[in-house]
Image 1 (tube, rainbow, N blue to C red):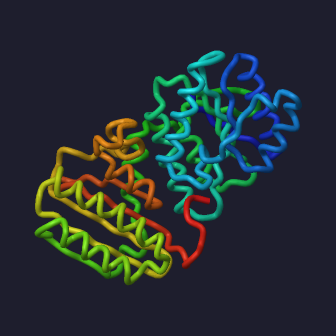
Image 2: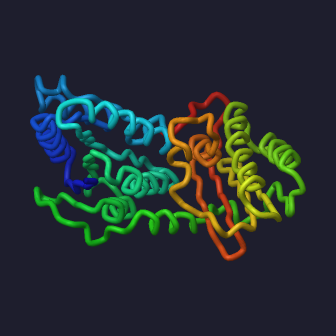
Length: 317
């Protein structure tokens, strides 16, 4: 079950969270809080001594983590949950949207993908959304990505719920404003992978000031380029745009047989990373947004990242 509680105040959110977790503890669920520190403290205060049985891990709500990292945490918790108690994992999450619409988009992507990626697993998750504080676009995320809504203590099916693949494909059609300008790097019919990787490296060196971020972004796009040469069809092209705050890179090939928007949230071959298939998974770990955009002409992988200043902390906030 993946539900969203639409509340009117922080106090109502804490009350619902505490009741939801208490229900899980009584059932023998492995119960986890994935919330802001102040929410964790308030919920633990309501639970009292029972709070000792509740774990907390904010990575599940993308604090200091991107979607593949969060999915790995959930999978690890499920493996623990099935060995004890009810055999079920129960998560109380507070999506932390902040003020950046790009983060809103990535949380919507994660919320939608989670419906497919944990389908059939022994996981229950309730996400809390404050109707008085969050903008309408964010509240739409709750309605579109949660099959069940909790409002005023009543659980109802969400009439606005959309299937995960539809949500993910629509996200792929959103373009960054910088893409309306001229790219700082462009190549068509790239003859070889090594040359394309070198060109992308030089382009990133010119526009990404933080050395660590530059290395991460190059590794991620290099893996995407390798996928295009190994699994796609030629010709292969690439574009890179930057405007001082954002960098966007696209890698396109002419193949039409692949375009799964869920690819890369988990390693392609499970926990055996030596088996390969990590290209899109690494890209999702290293870039802020990764879209798979399909068209009759082929597949485009679009990668987006907000640029950091040298020394600025990396990772989702």
